[in-house]
Image 1 (tube, helix red, strand yellow):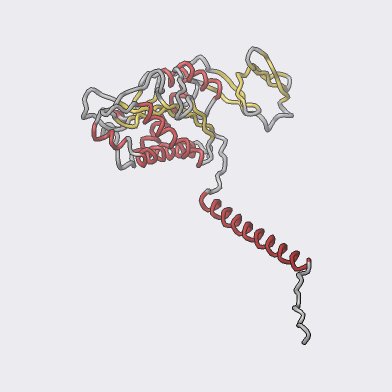
Image 2 (cartoon, rainbow, N blue to C red; image 1 turned 90 degrees about the vertical axis):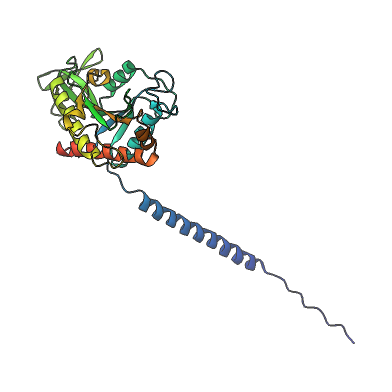
Length: 300
């Protein structure tokens, strides 16, 4: 009896090609789905921010190397709390479309003197300065926030200025269709007609900057008054929004205020000041006050 021949199956190369193409298509499809989901999630969690061309300088008081600031019961240094609120404020302002500069790199061991900070501010020309501090007092029962402006602003920078190509220069004169300005030690000029949309002339006076700084303080007082974990230093506004002769506010030719977020020497208040959620709430209230000030000036 003849043996049955076993049938041999042979896979054709075309079969492997089909399988490979199918697998590649599936991988690409999965990647496409994952990418789409990731994009939608990011879009929902990150709202579009429209830049408003305003620059806010954040000055986090003291530092880790030189002057650490006040010391709270338990040993926490003021600069740590200043940095925590300043970081939260930076994030809040960036989320609202502001540009932020720092007089001292937040969260670092960088040491910056008041002279260094003033020099940076006078070079960068921010639209507003917010200096963040925390208070101390021999009387441990004293509590509450304070907002400080300075009515003794230096007048060394009084005069006419021109904002040109995103930089600010001391203006010298307008003559024969040209505007002359000082760039360092050099005198430069540009054609007024050709650059009509690229420059802005403004007057700078110490008196006006003091008035604007006080107006900022008033807006901050209103917005910070909504905070639940902390209240103003006094029931009287004039004892909470105060004038004090501070170097950084006096010497920097910029509108600015100092915010004393509360008293580290009050045992109940320091517990509130160390709370991360409260620090974010403080940052939001300060940002709300900044918004209100610039909206009143119709700049945002």
